[in-house]
Length: 308
Image (tube, rainbow, N blue to C red; front, side, top):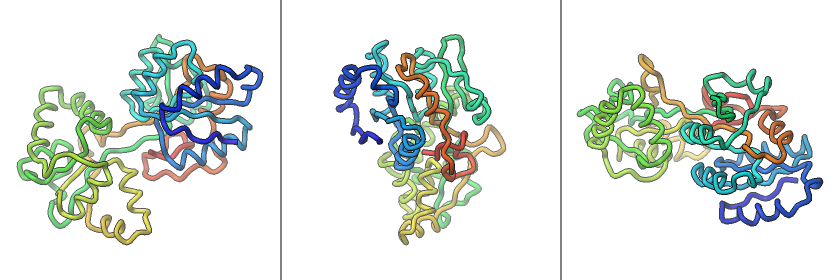
């Protein structure tokens, strides 16, 4: 039976106390999951896993940073078995802090490309990518020539003055892209690029990726950035308004002639002090009988999860 989802870390102390008070022999069929993912598709996967294995899943859900801080505070007393984070930078940070432990798995190494795994670098800590999402450019087909927005760098072009929209630059999706641009261009050029993008804003950053797409469709913005799954949700929608949005926009996979389109990753890891290690390994390796259909060519790395 799947335990009801806890709303956030406000409920976490109660879960920790309950786990600490539970006799060890009663925990044989238990898995304690700390997750930064909050999606209905995951609910189905959790239910399937419990049905197939008999292992009950206890969950704490929060943002990446809140989960990492909780792990640091709990230390060796942490009840966490599996950690799910949704940003490569946070996965790397947790890895180098030693919050994970090694997991040598032929199953995972076969399914997941080496580039999407955080390998043990001597600190005894590693993680495995479970889904990816690309950050693409959407543009208003009636107002912007696609030739103007073939690369991320193009968002700083003077021709796009007053036409660019983004969500907050402090959001992990944007921070991840900015970090990647710093790697590709160097810090000085990346800073210059970011300043150029800001100078081209149609309005102050607000809302999520879906809001940016809708603003492009209405003409409030000429171009915007979005993760692929937000776009595909609109494409799959049966609502006429969503279908109209899709008809009005075009999509560009940037930088095809250079370093390629930016892709971020969600990952799973075995917690450093996992009390139910065997159950945790079964969960991370788990693959449903009918894998979820990916939402884009880059959506699924292991066949187990849909892209966020």
